[in-house]
Length: 204
Image (cartoon, rainbow, N blue to C red):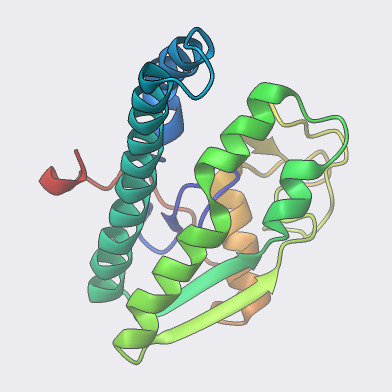
């Protein structure tokens, strides 16, 4: 399962994978290449050179993201039998009104649809179970009592239930809500400590 930052989580043992954010890592270089292209005479030899360099950088970014996601799918499918996903409307999230440019870019960089496809491929290739669960209010629903915290904002990284007092990392709470909705665990499952998955040396 993954959290609100586009990070795959395992609520059964607390492991999570940090978003590689390839666009953020390459943003300064890409902006520089765009600036260089804009200064070249349109359709000149130097314009074509600058355009080719920019296209190669975008291709490198796309390849890095896809490679990271495929390797993650293999890693997780080797260690787990069930993959539970939020059934997100990724394009709708990006186009949602009121999003800041930075927030929209972060959602685009998370590449939910591509991540989902790569993870599903890894699990289905090994004959393992993939479940898509409704994403409605997963971040705001209390895993323990099921009440909705309507005051939770995007900036809040810790979930606190005003009804029962349950407090937990926001993404882990959302993952536990998804797990409960899938019917795979009883509602009384205990929380676990979050532990990052060490990056694979080939992820860069």
